[in-house]
Image (cartoon, rainbow, N blue to C red; front, side, top):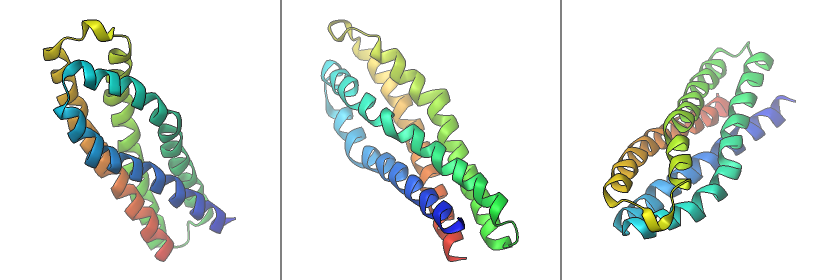
Length: 151
């Protein structure tokens, strides 16, 4: 049971962190260079596809992290690492829920014909800043979960 939990925990954390990292490394700089209407159109097409699987994966990583705390409370190093990973997962989820996803929902309601360049740029700067924070938090969580496996 513990081995399965660890596998699912690391797998979910790795896919979500990898997705955040790919967006940070490739999508963010690309969208930054696009005119507002093109960036908005890209966001409308790309974001719903990622939001189908990435938030649930962050949740699965956190849930299996809690389960691991219950199953493996005796190993202090692994327990501390999983607890730290949970903090990373929590930060990832909170930043997503409180900042990035509300921006996603707001721009999804815009008509592409009416995209305001200034407002788009303002929201993208905010979205990008908080995406970097959640990417770092997701990578931290993954590192902790992996280290717990090795502990």
